[in-house]
Amino acid sequence: MAGLIIKELKLRHLATRILIVAPGHLKDQWRRELKDRFEEDFVVVDRATLGAFYGQNVWVRESQVITSIDFAKQEEVLASLSAVQYDLIIVDEAHKMAAYRYGDNLSKTDRYRLGERLSEICTHLLFLTATPHRGDPENFRLFLDLLEPGFFATSDMLAESIRQHDNPLFIRRVKEDLKDFDGKPLFLPRHVATIEFNLGVESEDEKRLYNDLSRYVNAQYNKALTSEKRRNVAFALVILQRRLASSTYALLRSLERRKRRLEELLQGAPQRQRTADEGYDVDELDDLSEEERWRREEAWETLSVAENRRELEQEVSSLDALIAQARAIVNAAPPVEAKLRHLRAALEQLNRDHPGEKILIFTESRDTLEHLEKNVRLWGYSVCTIHGGMDLASRIQAEKTFKNEAQIMVATEAAGERDQSPVLSPDDQLRYSLESQPPGTAHGADSPLRSDARSLCVQPGSDRHARGTGVAGGVSQTGRDPPGARQR
Image (cartoon, rainbow, N blue to C red; front, side):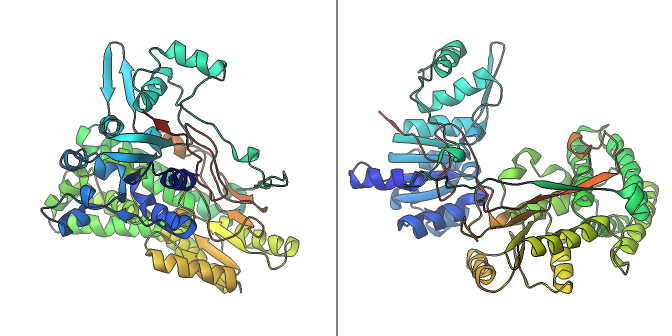
């Protein structure tokens, strides 16, 4: 729908200069969707682009631009961007431009300050978000203040307008409301089946690894909390829990990387340790491209709170024991990993119920993706993959392979870029989602992993992966949000 707004404004000769601000990992998707569906050419502006046009203001040079929110918010970038007046600015995931009030104090994030500047340099302003309201009325009012400063003087006025369904600043759409010209729903129902299993009963080796890793993580995590500069170390330990939730193979690879790094530290490389520990902002992790997030997580997962050689040697010894356990599970023949066995059984059941249908297996970890690709191929299925390390051309080729040749695609979120899954039409998609997380991991490592239960989530049905609602938000047939625009 954002593309339709662009087209309509251009046809009315109301928009020539257009800027789209999106999370970094969605820039290529925006460019591709606008080109494929609306024949609109946009230029992605980033640090490399600025370097290529040294001495020029690239924002002036290009009339249709896509950039990332965290690039645009940088002071030196924002200064050159502010020199341009735009006819239309679109901000995707706009809720990230947040401000908060604590008593009489107003705290504005850098992204919010970017929003204030964008509001000043455009005629039409469009926000897309699935989560505009975070339960804080004042935060929501400040967010709408970017669209039309001062429109709602108080949170009470905003709440009343919502109750009266009289708010001209936003449009709410949910996919269940979308229908074709015959009145039929565009999105068919989603059917979810959760397959539960108990490690204590089905895999004693995995349960032992699970508990030993929990003890290791909790001991290291609590130690990390004693130092403010070790915040990323604590996050690194949570990553190990997430790896175990993904697959034993992913955990094994992470433990091996961690051990290798600690052995390097034993040989004398403290400066690199300190740089990795202090150089990243965990809060912006979700806005990174998938490949960059993996790279940073791999750096984080090698951090340690050890202060001397003896502590490093003790931690390496602990890792050796965990690695031996994980490797024994991964290399076991026949496979003993419970989730892998249940996955195979689920695939066989899906094939019986829906012979020859396409199946998507989603996973967060690239290590798990490689593990699944290898095993699914050994089970006799034709397989292809999509992940964040592939360039756009390779992803498009993988989509073609899936549509025309392979029955199963194993993919990370790069296949759908969070908002849609472009590889299948709504009528032929059978989506299988691999989502396993031990209870307790969402609460951090200070809550020990006490539960033995893990699960697979199966989502079969002709259904596109799309999101729901928000300020100027909803879902169109392309999976994007229909916008509401502001004209001054």
